[in-house]
Image 1 (cartoon, rainbow, N blue to C red):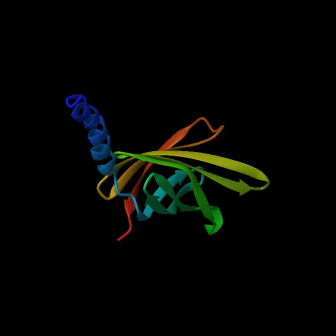
Image 2 (image 1 turned 90 degrees about the vertical axis):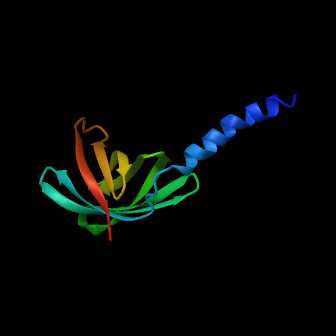
Image 3 (image 1 turned 30 degrees about the horizontal axis):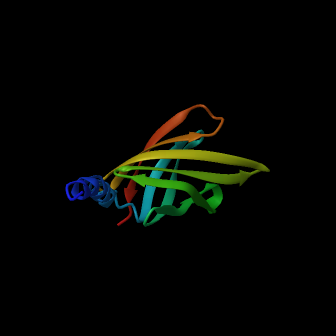
Length: 124
């Protein structure tokens, strides 16, 4: 029995170490996001609290759009935004890789079929 206890603790310690290495994305990030009508500046305010990843994204006409379904795993992040425009809900899915003060994103609008890439940088 004594041998099994340390062996069972090893996977738990490995998981805790892996979680501790999760990228720090808290705070304000700014990006030039490509779109149909050229690029526009988007501001993201991320908040990570334990396993919860929330925040907002600046939307068309400056409104704040809540971030939902946020996940941080190591240097990978993902989230969804839902915005209302002319009576329609626009769902946008983001996946990104954090490297220091940059996040390389791939974004896809639900039903849009075409993804776009851009980089966000931590605001100073």
